[in-house]
Image (cartoon, rainbow, N blue to C red; front, side, top):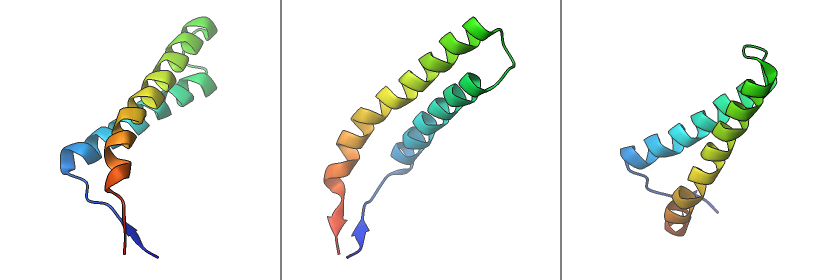
Length: 68
């Protein structure tokens, strides 16, 4: 069973942006470019922002998934 979803370009950009923010947060948590306390605060903040901003997007897109 194939599932399809129609997503507009702005919605796709928002999804990509939230994933990028979360990815940068993970990168900061794993990297060594800043002093540890600053890196940890910024990394956790970006990771949380990326993860939390995904929730409303998912709530908007998941109901549109259809089976074909």
